[in-house]
Image (cartoon, rainbow, N blue to C red; front, side, top):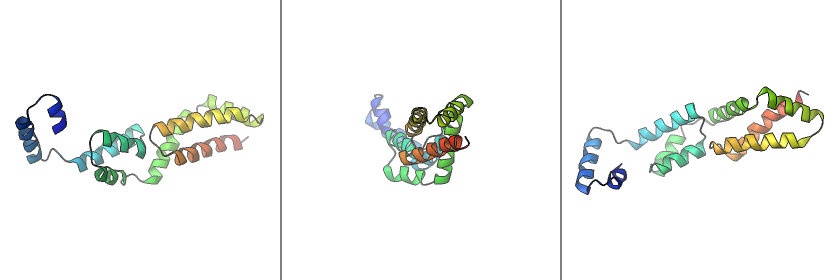
Length: 146
């Protein structure tokens, strides 16, 4: 907050005064901010740990505080969120394409959708290993029913 005020052209005395007032009213709490940010972005935006770590670091939150906030994410909940995101992308059209490709032993269609879905999860901040596992499981489930 102090850096932002300084960048906006406020003098050092004004910045110090504002920071003192905000602190006195308990409005500067990085722990609470990080915890709320992680909860909100994970729950409502489907962000994974990696993305949340980068977002909070960009906001200037200390690494230790970020890690404590990220510890609140249950690994099973993170995996479930990743599965939900993949499930939304597996539209009936994509499912049909995967089923047809499995019947024809055409790996190129499977590989294309696999790469796209894994990329989507990784861009949203899910660990690559988890993304590969979740997407592989979802595609295997579709193609094994054939």
